[in-house]
Length: 225
Image 1 (cartoon, helix red, strand yellow):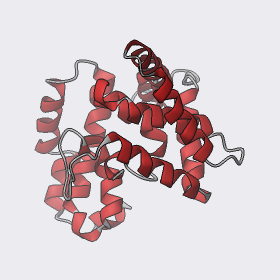
Image 2: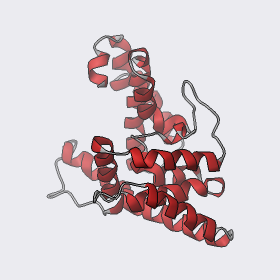
Image 3: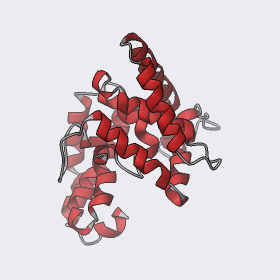
């Protein structure tokens, strides 16, 4: 979608964020916060996509822009940002959303959920440096499934330590009941997302976002009002 819109954008600005001086500036800024080269490369790619989306934002629907901008929305609110609502209202919005998930949005949720529940497979032969296989290897090194599992274990432990296990389980059960039970396998992930939202006041925001990730394209976390 962005490629088509960028045909009408300032080409010099496009070049600056794909191969020019802005790329170097962005990389330096990212490297000050991320020491892991794999994470740094992924963050740079995400920042480039967001920068290009900002160039053509006036040609996009607000919901489209929100999805693309989302990696940065919590730490650097974008246009139209609204303060985060109370937890109970945010969970109520999530529960209202779940029964409406059908068709392509639900299929995408299931696809993302599979990535977050299955360890990455090694790239056969290692791949050629700089090729698509090398990109896949870099993504695998981040190990989304391991990060997702670790975040969920942290949520459970935190709920137990804070004496909120009963309420935590109730929120999880409510989401699982509200999610579509049609065999695509998103029921359990809905419970995980609701549990993360419920514990958001005692968790790092990146953990909450990770647990919500399967549903992020359908409804960005920041839009749960």
